[in-house]
Image (cartoon, rainbow, N blue to C red):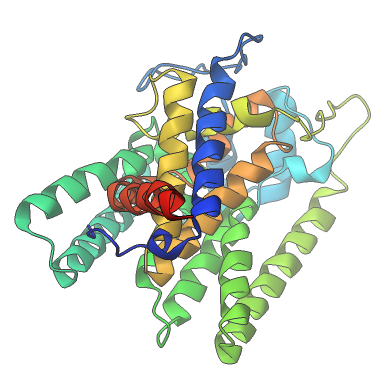
Length: 359
Protein backbone atom coordinates (compact mmCIF):
# COMPACT_ATOMS: atom_id res chain seq x y z
CA UNK A 1 0.00 0.00 0.00
CA UNK A 2 1.59 3.21 -1.18
CA UNK A 3 1.10 6.81 -0.25
CA UNK A 4 0.36 10.02 -2.11
CA UNK A 5 2.62 10.92 -4.97
CA UNK A 6 4.09 7.44 -5.20
CA UNK A 7 2.32 6.16 -8.33
CA UNK A 8 3.06 6.83 -11.97
CA UNK A 9 -0.02 9.06 -12.19
CA UNK A 10 1.65 11.69 -10.02
CA UNK A 11 3.59 12.93 -13.06
CA UNK A 12 0.92 12.33 -15.68
CA UNK A 13 -0.09 15.44 -17.69
CA UNK A 14 -3.34 16.94 -16.46
CA UNK A 15 -5.15 16.46 -19.77
CA UNK A 16 -4.17 12.77 -19.88
CA UNK A 17 -5.43 12.25 -16.34
CA UNK A 18 -8.75 13.86 -17.19
CA UNK A 19 -9.11 11.70 -20.31
CA UNK A 20 -8.43 8.58 -18.26
CA UNK A 21 -11.01 9.55 -15.63
CA UNK A 22 -13.55 10.31 -18.36
CA UNK A 23 -12.89 6.86 -19.86
CA UNK A 24 -13.52 5.21 -16.48
CA UNK A 25 -16.77 7.14 -16.15
CA UNK A 26 -17.83 6.10 -19.66
CA UNK A 27 -17.03 2.43 -19.08
CA UNK A 28 -18.97 2.51 -15.81
CA UNK A 29 -22.03 4.14 -17.38
CA UNK A 30 -22.15 1.97 -20.51
CA UNK A 31 -23.53 -1.16 -18.79
CA UNK A 32 -26.30 0.93 -17.19
CA UNK A 33 -27.68 2.17 -20.51
CA UNK A 34 -30.98 0.61 -21.65
CA UNK A 35 -30.05 -2.40 -23.78
CA UNK A 36 -30.83 -6.14 -23.96
CA UNK A 37 -29.05 -7.93 -21.11
CA UNK A 38 -26.28 -10.38 -21.89
CA UNK A 39 -27.54 -13.93 -21.45
CA UNK A 40 -24.86 -16.32 -20.22
CA UNK A 41 -25.88 -19.95 -20.79
CA UNK A 42 -25.22 -22.16 -17.80
CA UNK A 43 -24.37 -19.33 -15.40
CA UNK A 44 -24.93 -20.41 -11.81
CA UNK A 45 -24.90 -18.91 -8.37
CA UNK A 46 -21.58 -19.19 -6.55
CA UNK A 47 -21.07 -22.73 -5.28
CA UNK A 48 -24.12 -24.13 -7.08
CA UNK A 49 -23.62 -27.60 -8.49
CA UNK A 50 -23.02 -27.86 -12.22
CA UNK A 51 -25.36 -29.88 -14.45
CA UNK A 52 -24.39 -33.43 -15.31
CA UNK A 53 -23.33 -32.63 -18.88
CA UNK A 54 -21.15 -29.71 -17.91
CA UNK A 55 -17.53 -29.58 -19.13
CA UNK A 56 -16.11 -30.93 -15.86
CA UNK A 57 -18.05 -34.18 -16.28
CA UNK A 58 -16.55 -34.55 -19.73
CA UNK A 59 -13.00 -34.03 -18.45
CA UNK A 60 -13.56 -36.53 -15.64
CA UNK A 61 -14.66 -39.17 -18.13
CA UNK A 62 -11.64 -38.51 -20.35
CA UNK A 63 -9.27 -38.89 -17.40
CA UNK A 64 -11.02 -42.08 -16.31
CA UNK A 65 -10.64 -43.47 -19.83
CA UNK A 66 -6.91 -42.69 -19.82
CA UNK A 67 -6.53 -44.46 -16.48
CA UNK A 68 -8.17 -47.50 -18.07
CA UNK A 69 -5.57 -47.47 -20.85
CA UNK A 70 -7.07 -45.43 -23.69
CA UNK A 71 -4.98 -42.78 -25.42
CA UNK A 72 -5.91 -39.17 -24.76
CA UNK A 73 -7.13 -38.41 -28.27
CA UNK A 74 -9.11 -41.64 -28.55
CA UNK A 75 -10.77 -40.92 -25.20
CA UNK A 76 -11.41 -37.24 -25.95
CA UNK A 77 -13.04 -37.94 -29.31
CA UNK A 78 -15.26 -40.72 -27.94
CA UNK A 79 -16.38 -38.75 -24.89
CA UNK A 80 -17.04 -35.52 -26.76
CA UNK A 81 -19.34 -37.45 -29.09
CA UNK A 82 -21.03 -39.12 -26.12
CA UNK A 83 -21.60 -35.75 -24.46
CA UNK A 84 -22.81 -34.23 -27.74
CA UNK A 85 -19.87 -31.87 -27.89
CA UNK A 86 -18.32 -30.78 -31.20
CA UNK A 87 -15.22 -32.45 -32.60
CA UNK A 88 -14.43 -29.72 -35.13
CA UNK A 89 -12.49 -27.50 -35.49
CA UNK A 90 -9.60 -29.30 -33.74
CA UNK A 91 -9.23 -26.40 -31.30
CA UNK A 92 -12.30 -27.73 -29.46
CA UNK A 93 -10.06 -30.41 -27.94
CA UNK A 94 -8.11 -29.28 -24.90
CA UNK A 95 -4.39 -29.83 -24.73
CA UNK A 96 -3.74 -33.25 -23.16
CA UNK A 97 -1.36 -31.97 -20.47
CA UNK A 98 -3.81 -31.71 -17.58
CA UNK A 99 -5.55 -34.99 -18.44
CA UNK A 100 -2.18 -36.76 -18.39
CA UNK A 101 -1.28 -35.15 -15.05
CA UNK A 102 -4.61 -36.07 -13.45
CA UNK A 103 -4.44 -39.60 -14.81
CA UNK A 104 -0.91 -39.93 -13.46
CA UNK A 105 -2.00 -38.74 -10.02
CA UNK A 106 -4.86 -41.26 -10.30
CA UNK A 107 -6.79 -40.10 -7.24
CA UNK A 108 -8.68 -36.81 -7.23
CA UNK A 109 -7.52 -36.15 -3.67
CA UNK A 110 -3.91 -36.00 -4.90
CA UNK A 111 -4.83 -33.60 -7.70
CA UNK A 112 -6.80 -31.38 -5.35
CA UNK A 113 -3.96 -31.48 -2.83
CA UNK A 114 -1.49 -30.34 -5.50
CA UNK A 115 -3.79 -27.51 -6.60
CA UNK A 116 -4.37 -26.37 -3.02
CA UNK A 117 -0.62 -26.59 -2.43
CA UNK A 118 0.00 -24.19 -5.30
CA UNK A 119 -2.72 -21.93 -3.86
CA UNK A 120 -0.95 -21.96 -0.51
CA UNK A 121 2.39 -21.11 -2.12
CA UNK A 122 0.81 -18.12 -3.89
CA UNK A 123 -0.65 -16.82 -0.62
CA UNK A 124 2.60 -17.40 1.29
CA UNK A 125 4.66 -15.68 -1.39
CA UNK A 126 2.27 -12.73 -1.48
CA UNK A 127 2.47 -12.44 2.32
CA UNK A 128 6.27 -12.41 2.13
CA UNK A 129 6.08 -9.61 -0.42
CA UNK A 130 3.90 -7.58 1.96
CA UNK A 131 6.40 -8.08 4.79
CA UNK A 132 9.26 -7.00 2.52
CA UNK A 133 7.25 -3.90 1.54
CA UNK A 134 6.92 -2.92 5.21
CA UNK A 135 3.15 -3.41 5.45
CA UNK A 136 1.70 -3.47 8.96
CA UNK A 137 -0.01 -6.57 10.32
CA UNK A 138 -3.47 -5.11 9.70
CA UNK A 139 -2.49 -4.17 6.14
CA UNK A 140 -1.14 -7.66 5.55
CA UNK A 141 -4.34 -9.30 6.77
CA UNK A 142 -6.52 -6.99 4.66
CA UNK A 143 -4.34 -7.45 1.59
CA UNK A 144 -4.36 -11.24 1.81
CA UNK A 145 -8.14 -11.21 2.32
CA UNK A 146 -8.63 -9.08 -0.80
CA UNK A 147 -6.15 -11.14 -2.82
CA UNK A 148 -7.96 -14.39 -2.01
CA UNK A 149 -11.17 -13.08 -3.60
CA UNK A 150 -9.56 -13.67 -6.97
CA UNK A 151 -8.07 -16.98 -5.93
CA UNK A 152 -11.51 -18.19 -4.86
CA UNK A 153 -11.60 -19.88 -8.27
CA UNK A 154 -9.72 -22.75 -6.62
CA UNK A 155 -12.88 -23.45 -4.64
CA UNK A 156 -15.21 -24.00 -7.60
CA UNK A 157 -16.84 -27.42 -7.76
CA UNK A 158 -14.23 -30.01 -8.76
CA UNK A 159 -11.81 -27.23 -9.60
CA UNK A 160 -8.90 -29.59 -10.20
CA UNK A 161 -10.53 -30.55 -13.51
CA UNK A 162 -10.63 -26.94 -14.69
CA UNK A 163 -7.77 -26.16 -17.07
CA UNK A 164 -8.26 -22.43 -16.53
CA UNK A 165 -7.93 -22.72 -12.75
CA UNK A 166 -4.55 -24.45 -12.97
CA UNK A 167 -3.32 -21.99 -15.59
CA UNK A 168 -4.46 -18.97 -13.58
CA UNK A 169 -2.81 -20.13 -10.35
CA UNK A 170 0.43 -20.93 -12.19
CA UNK A 171 0.45 -17.51 -13.88
CA UNK A 172 -0.10 -15.79 -10.52
CA UNK A 173 2.78 -17.77 -9.03
CA UNK A 174 4.94 -16.99 -12.07
CA UNK A 175 4.39 -13.26 -11.65
CA UNK A 176 5.10 -13.40 -7.93
CA UNK A 177 8.32 -15.32 -8.55
CA UNK A 178 9.52 -12.96 -11.28
CA UNK A 179 12.65 -10.90 -10.63
CA UNK A 180 14.62 -8.95 -13.18
CA UNK A 181 17.74 -10.90 -12.18
CA UNK A 182 15.99 -14.24 -11.53
CA UNK A 183 13.35 -14.83 -14.16
CA UNK A 184 13.72 -18.51 -15.04
CA UNK A 185 11.10 -19.75 -12.49
CA UNK A 186 8.56 -17.38 -14.08
CA UNK A 187 9.42 -18.67 -17.56
CA UNK A 188 9.03 -22.28 -16.40
CA UNK A 189 5.76 -21.73 -14.53
CA UNK A 190 4.30 -19.62 -17.32
CA UNK A 191 5.18 -22.24 -19.91
CA UNK A 192 3.49 -24.99 -17.89
CA UNK A 193 0.39 -22.78 -17.54
CA UNK A 194 0.21 -22.38 -21.33
CA UNK A 195 0.75 -26.10 -21.93
CA UNK A 196 -2.27 -26.75 -19.70
CA UNK A 197 -4.43 -24.02 -21.26
CA UNK A 198 -3.22 -22.24 -24.37
CA UNK A 199 -5.36 -19.19 -23.55
CA UNK A 200 -2.74 -18.31 -20.92
CA UNK A 201 -0.28 -17.42 -23.69
CA UNK A 202 -0.87 -13.63 -23.36
CA UNK A 203 1.22 -13.92 -20.19
CA UNK A 204 4.24 -15.03 -22.25
CA UNK A 205 3.74 -12.28 -24.82
CA UNK A 206 3.42 -9.56 -22.17
CA UNK A 207 6.53 -10.74 -20.36
CA UNK A 208 8.46 -10.93 -23.64
CA UNK A 209 7.25 -7.47 -24.60
CA UNK A 210 8.41 -5.92 -21.34
CA UNK A 211 11.77 -7.70 -21.60
CA UNK A 212 12.20 -6.32 -25.12
CA UNK A 213 11.27 -2.77 -24.09
CA UNK A 214 13.67 -2.96 -21.14
CA UNK A 215 16.43 -4.38 -23.38
CA UNK A 216 16.86 -7.47 -21.24
CA UNK A 217 18.08 -9.60 -24.12
CA UNK A 218 18.74 -12.89 -22.35
CA UNK A 219 15.36 -12.70 -20.68
CA UNK A 220 13.66 -11.81 -23.96
CA UNK A 221 15.29 -14.81 -25.62
CA UNK A 222 13.97 -17.08 -22.86
CA UNK A 223 10.41 -15.77 -23.19
CA UNK A 224 10.60 -16.07 -26.97
CA UNK A 225 11.82 -19.66 -26.62
CA UNK A 226 8.87 -20.38 -24.31
CA UNK A 227 6.44 -18.94 -26.87
CA UNK A 228 7.95 -21.07 -29.62
CA UNK A 229 7.80 -24.18 -27.41
CA UNK A 230 4.13 -23.63 -26.63
CA UNK A 231 3.39 -22.89 -30.30
CA UNK A 232 5.09 -26.11 -31.37
CA UNK A 233 3.21 -28.14 -28.74
CA UNK A 234 -0.10 -26.59 -29.76
CA UNK A 235 0.61 -27.20 -33.46
CA UNK A 236 1.33 -30.87 -32.72
CA UNK A 237 -1.88 -31.05 -30.69
CA UNK A 238 -3.93 -29.54 -33.54
CA UNK A 239 -2.42 -31.99 -36.00
CA UNK A 240 -3.30 -34.91 -33.73
CA UNK A 241 -6.85 -33.64 -33.18
CA UNK A 242 -7.51 -32.72 -36.80
CA UNK A 243 -8.31 -36.32 -37.78
CA UNK A 244 -10.83 -36.98 -35.00
CA UNK A 245 -13.89 -35.42 -36.65
CA UNK A 246 -16.35 -37.88 -38.17
CA UNK A 247 -19.36 -37.32 -40.46
CA UNK A 248 -22.34 -36.42 -38.33
CA UNK A 249 -20.26 -34.96 -35.49
CA UNK A 250 -21.13 -31.50 -34.25
CA UNK A 251 -19.11 -28.48 -35.37
CA UNK A 252 -18.41 -25.67 -32.92
CA UNK A 253 -19.73 -22.18 -33.49
CA UNK A 254 -17.20 -19.41 -33.99
CA UNK A 255 -15.46 -17.94 -30.97
CA UNK A 256 -15.79 -14.50 -32.52
CA UNK A 257 -18.66 -13.49 -30.28
CA UNK A 258 -18.27 -9.70 -30.43
CA UNK A 259 -19.80 -9.54 -26.96
CA UNK A 260 -18.38 -6.09 -26.30
CA UNK A 261 -17.98 -4.51 -22.89
CA UNK A 262 -20.85 -6.50 -21.36
CA UNK A 263 -19.07 -9.78 -22.07
CA UNK A 264 -15.74 -8.41 -20.82
CA UNK A 265 -17.44 -7.42 -17.57
CA UNK A 266 -19.07 -10.84 -17.28
CA UNK A 267 -15.65 -12.49 -17.33
CA UNK A 268 -14.72 -10.54 -14.19
CA UNK A 269 -17.47 -12.22 -12.17
CA UNK A 270 -15.07 -14.98 -11.13
CA UNK A 271 -13.98 -12.73 -8.29
CA UNK A 272 -16.22 -13.85 -5.45
CA UNK A 273 -16.86 -10.25 -4.29
CA UNK A 274 -17.88 -9.11 -7.77
CA UNK A 275 -20.00 -12.14 -8.64
CA UNK A 276 -23.36 -10.80 -7.44
CA UNK A 277 -22.82 -7.09 -8.19
CA UNK A 278 -24.68 -5.27 -10.97
CA UNK A 279 -22.66 -4.75 -14.14
CA UNK A 280 -21.97 -1.01 -13.64
CA UNK A 281 -20.31 -1.71 -10.28
CA UNK A 282 -18.32 -4.60 -11.74
CA UNK A 283 -17.20 -2.30 -14.56
CA UNK A 284 -16.08 0.33 -12.03
CA UNK A 285 -14.21 -2.29 -9.98
CA UNK A 286 -12.45 -3.63 -13.08
CA UNK A 287 -11.37 -0.14 -14.12
CA UNK A 288 -10.07 0.65 -10.63
CA UNK A 289 -8.19 -2.64 -10.52
CA UNK A 290 -6.44 -2.00 -13.81
CA UNK A 291 -5.66 1.61 -12.84
CA UNK A 292 -4.19 0.45 -9.55
CA UNK A 293 -1.95 -2.11 -11.22
CA UNK A 294 -0.86 0.15 -14.07
CA UNK A 295 0.09 3.02 -11.80
CA UNK A 296 2.23 1.03 -9.36
CA UNK A 297 5.98 1.50 -9.34
CA UNK A 298 6.45 -2.25 -9.44
CA UNK A 299 7.54 -4.24 -12.48
CA UNK A 300 5.20 -7.13 -11.75
CA UNK A 301 2.14 -4.96 -11.12
CA UNK A 302 2.57 -3.20 -14.45
CA UNK A 303 2.93 -6.54 -16.19
CA UNK A 304 -0.23 -7.72 -14.44
CA UNK A 305 -2.04 -4.58 -15.66
CA UNK A 306 -1.02 -5.34 -19.24
CA UNK A 307 -2.19 -8.96 -18.91
CA UNK A 308 -5.59 -8.05 -17.43
CA UNK A 309 -6.15 -5.19 -19.89
CA UNK A 310 -5.12 -7.45 -22.76
CA UNK A 311 -7.68 -10.06 -21.80
CA UNK A 312 -10.42 -7.45 -21.37
CA UNK A 313 -9.70 -5.93 -24.77
CA UNK A 314 -9.59 -9.37 -26.37
CA UNK A 315 -12.93 -10.29 -24.79
CA UNK A 316 -14.59 -7.38 -26.57
CA UNK A 317 -14.29 -9.50 -29.72
CA UNK A 318 -13.42 -13.07 -28.74
CA UNK A 319 -15.63 -15.40 -26.75
CA UNK A 320 -19.22 -16.54 -26.89
CA UNK A 321 -21.48 -15.85 -23.88
CA UNK A 322 -20.90 -19.42 -22.63
CA UNK A 323 -17.14 -18.75 -22.65
CA UNK A 324 -17.39 -16.26 -19.79
CA UNK A 325 -15.39 -18.69 -17.65
CA UNK A 326 -12.29 -17.55 -19.57
CA UNK A 327 -12.19 -14.75 -17.01
CA UNK A 328 -10.77 -17.28 -14.56
CA UNK A 329 -7.43 -16.75 -16.33
CA UNK A 330 -6.96 -13.22 -14.98
CA UNK A 331 -9.06 -13.49 -11.81
CA UNK A 332 -6.08 -13.82 -9.38
CA UNK A 333 -4.36 -10.70 -10.77
CA UNK A 334 -7.13 -8.13 -10.58
CA UNK A 335 -7.62 -7.93 -6.76
CA UNK A 336 -4.07 -6.67 -6.23
CA UNK A 337 -5.15 -3.66 -8.27
CA UNK A 338 -7.96 -3.02 -5.78
CA UNK A 339 -5.34 -2.67 -3.05
CA UNK A 340 -3.31 -0.24 -5.14
CA UNK A 341 -6.28 1.76 -6.43
CA UNK A 342 -6.67 4.29 -3.54
CA UNK A 343 -3.16 5.72 -3.96
CA UNK A 344 -3.46 5.61 -7.73
CA UNK A 345 -6.80 7.42 -7.70
CA UNK A 346 -5.48 10.06 -5.31
CA UNK A 347 -2.57 10.85 -7.61
CA UNK A 348 -4.81 10.71 -10.67
CA UNK A 349 -7.29 13.21 -9.26
CA UNK A 350 -4.52 15.53 -8.08
CA UNK A 351 -2.90 15.37 -11.50
CA UNK A 352 -6.22 15.91 -13.28
CA UNK A 353 -7.63 18.81 -11.27
CA UNK A 354 -4.90 20.44 -9.24
CA UNK A 355 -2.89 21.10 -12.39
CA UNK A 356 -5.93 22.12 -14.41
CA UNK A 357 -6.25 25.24 -12.27
CA UNK A 358 -2.70 26.22 -13.10
CA UNK A 359 -3.02 25.48 -16.83
